[in-house]
Length: 133
Ligand code: CDP
Image (cartoon, rainbow, N blue to C red):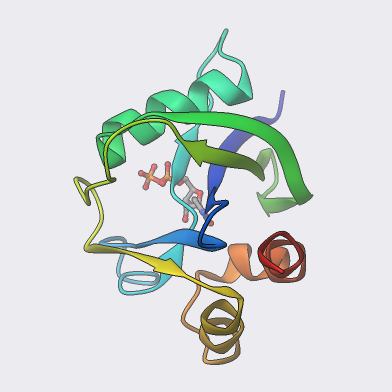
């Protein structure tokens, strides 16, 4: 069976900003920015897995919702899926990442063009720009 990695497109509806997290490891992607998340464990739904991962990595609560864009194949048997989410707890903290930042559509476009996002996540940029418009 395919394993799924879920990632959170946490959007602040008031400011129209998206939360990005800067990876600390492994070396190939250290310093690049991603939608935070992690692997879905056996018996977990995608949404509850994402809520657990965000509690662990960012020390806050989210409400996870609909899928954003298409699934990305990371390698055979491992797929990456983004879910839209909204913050439902205190400000996020970088417990597992180097840094966090909120970006608007213009900044996201610029970071994607500059190659500052992890490769897999760049597939979602058009979908994310639509959500931030
Ligand atoms: O297991 P580990 O903590 O290293 O990684 P993870 O954060 O749970 O992510 C599992 C895999 O998904 C890794 O290969 C990540 O590079 C990839 N990933 C990604 O490409 N984009 C994301 N937004 C999140 C994870």
